[in-house]
Amino acid sequence: MKKVFVNGYGSIGSRITSFLRDDPEITVVGVGKYSPDNDVNVAISRGLNVYVPERKLNDFKNFKISGTIESALDYCDLVIDAAPGGHGYKNKKNLYEPKDLMAIYQGGETTMGNEAVSDLLFNSRANYDLAIGKKHAMQGSCNVTGMGRILEPLRDRFAKRLIRFDVTLVRRWADIEQTEKHVPDTIEMTESPHHGDDVKMYFGKDAPLFVRAIKVPTRQMHLHIMDIRFNDKAPTPSEIHDVFKNEFGVATLWTAKGTKDIRDYARTMGFNFTDTNMIHIHANMTVSIGDMVQMMYSDDQTGIVIPENHMLMQAMLFGKSYADAFSHTESIFNMKEKKQKLEEHFARKN
Ligand SMILES: NC(=O)c1ccc[n+]([C@@H]2O[C@H](COP(=O)([O-])OP(=O)(O)OC[C@H]3O[C@@H](n4cnc5c(N)ncnc54)[C@H](OP(=O)(O)O)[C@@H]3O)[C@@H](O)[C@H]2O)c1
Image 1 (cartoon, rainbow, N blue to C red):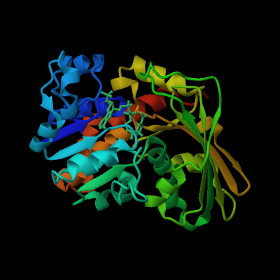
Image 2 (image 1 turned 90 degrees about the vertical axis):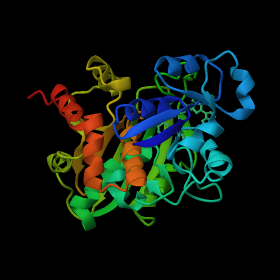
Image 3 (image 1 turned 90 degrees about the horizontal axis):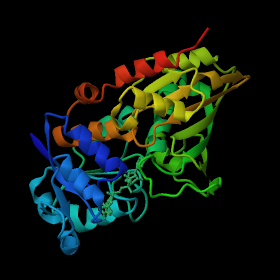
């Protein structure tokens, strides 16, 4: 049994913790909280030990916390950092490295430049084996993970026929449970988005991938609009959809009018946190024109990276083979069943 600490209990940390508690190979030592708010009691009511920074102990005197983050880290084999972007790097320097601790970071960090948390940006479909034996690794962000789920299978199937990918990321403003976050009535442009460079960390630095991004006022997932150019006549939409028939974490849907339809269905079906943990190809939007395929898929922003963290953790903690890690992750996340349910519910009507 390995011991894992989750530092940060927000959108990502709370989800990771919940799934880890279903994993019989893992003991969750506890979670790290930084603000003395109601979420401390929520975590405790869920049976979790809550730890706080030593310097903030006094702020938490009215809560039944279990001790300091600094002390909890002495008793764990690996920490999953789920801090707001940029704080993971500081935690690496101030906490994890001094304690010689294995750590997984989230996509708000970077693998480039002076503040790189690791040289590995993980995507289980692309580079699982590189995580075995790693001490520090970063899980790609939700958009970066989602793009990988489309790009890698396309490259496997069409290889040299592919000559260019142009992607527009339509990003959600906030997560569903981030009720304190205001969603303003504007469409915001993102200058120099990091997502393309991040994908190239595993897809190849010279990959002909061009990404732009905007943010829109919704909490209901991201949508990626992707144009794919071929060096000859492009495949038909059904040839494209065939590529994803047996892909992990990709559902092909025909009748979802929008992203909220999918979230609502996930809620109706009782999926944990109303997450699907996958991307959804909106098959009715796939078009083949001359040398180009146009497609759209939505990306469950909060859910998609959780099974990936679980795969990454198994590579680092246990050195498991891809096949072993995959089947263990599947036993906890039931991705195959979720995909099947989504595809049946949003099936083609004719
Ligand atoms: N949300 C998504 O859809 C999504 C998807 C993929 C990746 N990510 C990435 O996941 C990471 C976490 O994002 P999130 O959306 O979960 O953020 P979030 O909901 O704002 O939660 C952040 C959590 O980190 C805690 N925290 C604050 N300072 C910290 C520190 N110095 N060290 C450790 N934890 C600290 C916060 O504690 P208090 O509340 O107690 O202050 C809070 O529980 C980011 O890198 C983000 O880019 C997010």
